[in-house]
Structure formats: C-alpha cells, structure tokens
Amino acid sequence: MDAAPPRRARNAAGDILDAAHRVVARDGAGRLTLDAVAREVGMTKGGVLYNFPSKTALLAAMLTRMLERFEVEAAEAAVAAAAAGHSAPTLRGMLEAVEKLDNDHPQLHLAIVAAGAEDPAALAPLRAMAARLQARILDETADGPGAMLACAAADGLIFQRLMDMPPADPALRAAVRARILAIADALEPRA
Image 1: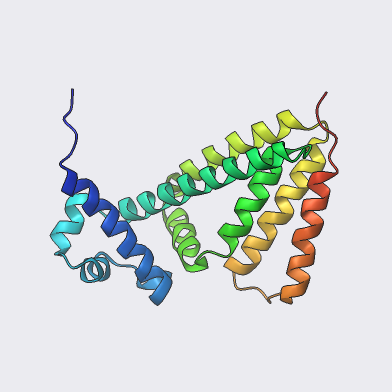
Image 2 (image 1 turned 120 degrees about the vertical axis):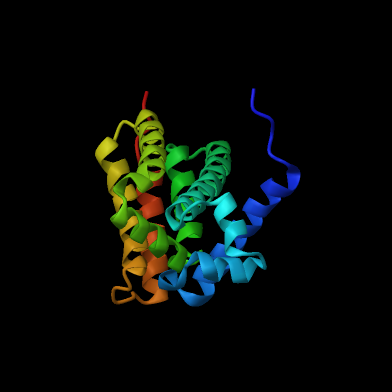
C-alpha cells in the first residue's frame, strides 16, 4: 500500500494550482507557463515540476479541480431544486452551476480548451462528467429533447463568452438565462 504524500506536498500542489489560476486570471491563458507559475507561487520551477511534470499535467489538474467544484455546486443546487419541487432538479442544478462557471474567469476555461486542442484526451474528465450529468438529467424527465435544448443553450452562452463573440447586452443575457430556466422548469418529469 502506498503511503500518503507528506502534508506539505499536498498543500504545495494546491498552492501551485491557486497560483496557476491567478496567472491565467491576471495575464490570460496564453501567459500560463511553468516559469510564471513558479514565480507566482514563490518556488523554483523544479518544485512545480515535482508536483506537475508538465504544463499539460498542470492544466489537467486545473480542469479536475474546476470539475470537482462544478459537480459539488451542481449537486447542491439540485438538492435545493428538488426540495423546491422543480421537475428536473439535476438540470436546474446544472444550469445554476453553469451560470457560476460562466461568471468565473473565462481565461481559465480558455486555457483548458487550448489544452484540449493540443491533447484531446485531456478533456476526458470533462466528457465523463458531462455524460454522468446527461444520464441523470435524462433519467429525471420525459422530455429528453427539451432537456438537451436547455443544456445546449446554456453551453452556447458559455462558448459565446469564451470565444469572445459579440457580447449580448447583460439584460438580454439575463433574460436568456431566465428563459433557459423556464424551459427546464416546464419539463415533464419521468413517471
């Protein structure tokens, strides 16, 4: 049985991920380098490489952390949606978590998309999470196409911002989000 890593090593990895997040948020996705992260966290590049042997490994860990937070937020929102009597609580929870994601450092998401373009396998955890959510969403509703339409519309808002497409007026974006939630709330639950 493997021994648990020393406590400082676990904290170092978290500190490095925090530093990488700050670099991307402040300087943009194109400026994420192991050297920049090392400077930000206050350690040598070797220290960063000890924890993350490549930039790809660092981006993969950033993606994993982001997905873990997303799933927790989506699950908490789904529990609240179920308690409030929404017919598709997993979809409602996912849509609420997507709204938070959309407002949280688009440069980080761009860095992850860039990593996926270089190495499509790097996005495997994202695909797996999306498949789990989709299965739960489709299990809750009798209107699979309506549920997937709501998901696709939410994804469209994220990608519109991510790709720096002409931004919609904030009031219009809010109205679109409200319409997506209305579609989700109107779905017929599975009997």
